[in-house]
Image (cartoon, rainbow, N blue to C red; front, side, top):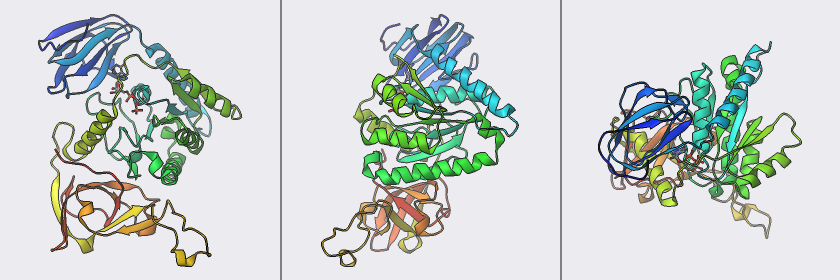
Length: 425
Ligand code: ATP
């Protein structure tokens, strides 16, 4: 192996239980195929012989349990083979979860399968482990629910959201999670500190809806959940982890790559005998990402929402009158005017207050969520249909121009604004 920018077709032979770690070049895609043997990318088996194309910057590993030969065509930033991986410990966790799913399914009243939550610092491989556990389960015919609470680098939809979706097939190594009908709540910011109460309120909403769905669906109930979390584990971040464990009734906590977090969680969860806290090794292959890279990949995720991963979608430009749409913001403003408060009291900001936003130039380049709310006071508790992107505000003619994945009328006239913006490039 070794770092390289070679751009010829070449073959790599992988011994059993080893992986080929790849960072695709910055400007060109990489083609790769499985020549012989068996191999998987983050839990999803590669089809034999078929070329797969990975976009620039893509970071991934091709792992083999029994040995494989891989062929690559194109240049990479780095590619090397590693024979030390935590994969055996990960698949052992999968085996235990699988046993619990079978138990849940076999029990007379069809009980709840495992609810796994994956926690750890940034760049410890949380999303990757979540993905492997989901794909391995799906391969076995389960339909686990993926819950992504990571508003910064989520893998279900655009940044600034928490979301859930059933995983019915192993996750596509290039396309990622298929976006059939995700359940999405819009937080609107990429850091939870912006409005911690709103974040908690949305986590609660999402958990309640899933709980309701499980009641009527024994199959997904037995399959359980895999919950991915944010890399923020200090202070309020830690408090939010506990809140998530509690709210989703998680019964398996997987702690990646941090001894301190593991021991803190083990101690605090000791009082709950049905919750298992497990420490897992971080993979040496996980790539650290700078905040600039994170910012870029957020912007890329928004682009992907409108244009698709390979520019295969064509969004529509639509025009609407200011009078036909209503934009709201959550939190911020004071709860009550000073005049309505006792003398000397300061107006307290209500984090869940829904306030109308005026149409002005501040809306330009903003990503707005389209709420399913029927009334403004339902905005906090409603999930969203998708997003629009504001490309022009004409104050004279009182018209807004926006990009939308589909043509025609929006599913609702209620839009939600956060601090999420995007500069189309
Ligand atoms: P965050 O806290 O930002 O959400 P995370 O802990 O979820 O990060 P991942 O997203 O799972 O971390 O991993 C970071 C990056 O490393 C991803 O681009 C992922 O594809 C890559 N990666 C993970 N494991 C490997 C591996 N074994 N070989 C190569 N790349 C890997």
